[in-house]
Length: 107
Image: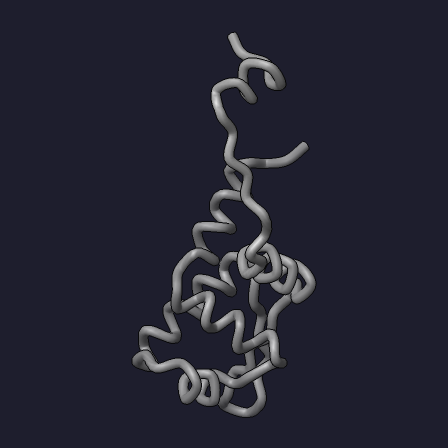
């Protein structure tokens, strides 16, 4: 059984433009916060907040290398598929009243 609230919470965390930039960057491979910050133009405290939100949501995790934290995507296949879905300019349909009347259940 799907937990719609958990799914909505996950999508909400991922739905921030900066977090999407972070995820796109980390799809290339693990990166320490300093290097990530050089590639995403936001303040270090702001980056830390976004990394924490993604880590708390169990989308990212990190390992320590000395004094540095290197972040990586815990579920890279999920993140890749999510980007494939939203980046794909798939065909869209337009229904007319007759289509609805003849082909779909109405009340």
